[in-house]
Length: 233
Image (cartoon, rainbow, N blue to C red; front, side, top):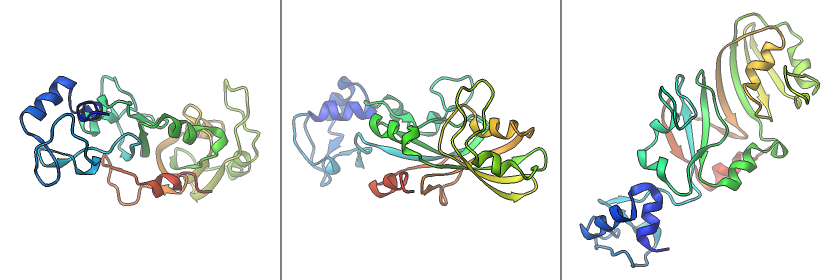
């Protein structure tokens, strides 16, 4: 692929815009030598205004999604893509969130431009466990753990029971819940089925991948080992 197309696909501008970057001498190699649109050089040596290029296709990002932000490209309020560099929204292939967290749920959110990886993560066959921490409006009844683990819980308007999930009680109104599915508002609806209401909800992990010290609103790219940890059992 020609450099002009590669750089345009990363969202740095149209081909016309990127051609102008070349003409202006703003695209160089790591040693500062000016590059031309038909040069063939290692990806990692390319610089724009002395800065390395964004990661190539196959990008995987982890974000600590804050409250009040929507997993959408268009919304009257703030969206998760507002927290990423603007050019990420026009990359080709497109960068998409891996599933969604609603506006009132915070925590670990993944993005990728790898469609096959996205579907591998969200597929029920992969049984990737997502762990959430919830605070509740009422005390737990004590039978929720057995109910969630039974594999027989039916949610309203659903035709199939939920897969077994685990519950760890942290306090009278405080719990961790691990699920392997991603049904609409699943965690909130599970507690609603027991007569309770989720007041706060945060996703802690996806597979063996955790947020670590990543602060709310921040993001970083994942390496190959971290991506593989998503599928660790």
